Image 1 (cartoon, helix red, strand yellow):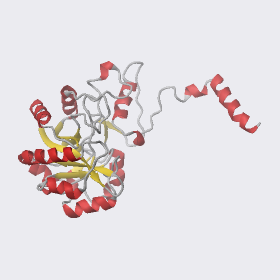
Image 2: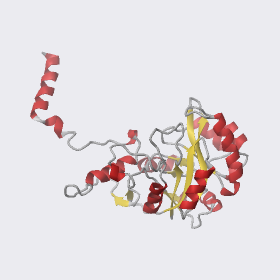
Image 3: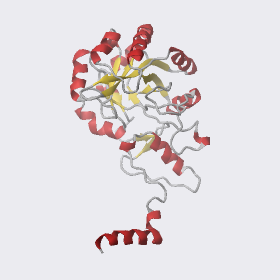
Image 4: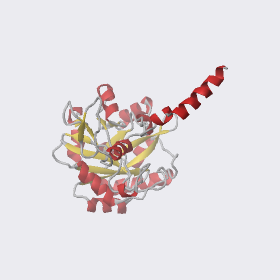
Length: 302
């Protein structure tokens, strides 16, 4: 089983939050720390050949060209990941240049029919719509894509949703990082910059990291896993094993407990997490604050 991550941003676009300065060293740390065998570069509505070449030369693993595009759905738009065969990179780059011109803004989108017009070979590539994740596609649009070109997998936000949804999906479910190496994370200390990044990967039963082999592997859902065994739940790029129920981190002061929690926090969307910060509960229970809150509540009834 090889770990892959086919949703990585390396160029700040109109769809990215400000402050993203791509750092190739952070990406290299991620690839090495997570032991990835292949990645795909998937910037929003654009393909940047120079950037792709830079990443490909810097890494010793397979790097595939791709994009995350805004596709029209019944209301608004959703995201679809496209990963192209490197043998078709010139055709892909040409189509992406047209797409970028037609969708220059973060809210611009195009129909799936138009996408197919721009990429005649798209059925031979990887098509991975958002499923249980922000900017997901509705069932009608998913059915339309399935009936026209088909799709190879469906992306969910995290391992928990993968566990819940995997049996009901009509395609393999995948979890990718959607990371932006170089983006400063919330509450980040300056010294943490190289070590912190969103992460997420999928195990693929595919010994050869060629595009054709990966495409063939996705045809069978049994080749796709999130965990190496039925019992393990992995956190952090280092694949630290954890329980699927409750975990407790023990350590002395300044041993890295809060830092570890923040790294885990970085990997999840706000709607998929609940983070209670240190002293957040106990501070509200201090006598003066408690008495004040009780008095305010009592005043409603007096």
